[in-house]
Length: 421
Image (cartoon, rainbow, N blue to C red):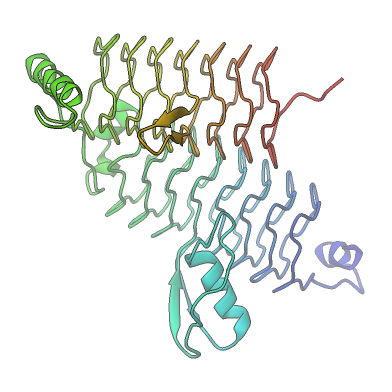
């Protein structure tokens, strides 16, 4: 680092840091100045790069999965084909960065390993054996921000064509003038984002959470959008009645409720019987679901911001990437549905990467729930039951955990937990 500092200062004897293809996983590089460093295909998984300076650095094909890049400055860095899955990037600066897709020609084993690792997620960490890739073949790799947390970050003027932002939290991100054609924003949260002057031609924002006024922007006219469909009150009542008949007859009569991608915002559905209902991508913004029965329901990527879910029954439900920001889930049941059927199977609730920022979960039961990567920033978890829950890589910054029970919970890489006194 000393020689690199001299290089940056243009002093005699200085030398650019040459760290390409090295493994720096879990290294603490917080606050370091690696501007203009050669870091091609560097492995920085789970590294601490908070407030680091990487201006103009060569970081193409870098592995930054689950790295901490909060407040980092990557202005004008070459990030082509790099992987930021699950990274913490709040308030990071990626202005005028190169995030284009890159073509990798497989000349040696190192390149084949990069392609396998980035493209084929074997297990939780994307590791494992795979069919060997033919030498000399080529593969395209997109910059990948899947499930990255990027609140308040700046991508002004960035070239992020075909970048993957699936599941990313992009609240308040500045995309002004960015090139985003062909980018993917499945299940991304884009509330408060600045899209003025951005090129979004062909970008897929069909199930992203956007401010209502954003949908009227000229910039989104050429994007792939799919506004949620509407259902009248009588039609919804009829669908719920058919669903209850389906439940009572064990599937012999009636019809299972298929409410995928429906706009049910502001509806009064308190005590609704929605056991096993299909609601992926549904918009339930501010909906009253107090004491509703949502056992085993599919709410994948649903928008439940500010919804009322007090004492609702969500046992065994699929909540993957669902957004409960500022929702009221006080006393809600999100524990496992146990001893089901003749085989006595348990069904834990799956809230993988769900968002609960600012939510009220006081007294909620989340025992044994899968909440890997969930965001509890500013949430109220007073008295919540979290025994044996999977809380790896969760964010608890600003959360209230008074009298919360975390016995037996897995908390590997969890952030923001109060220190024990």
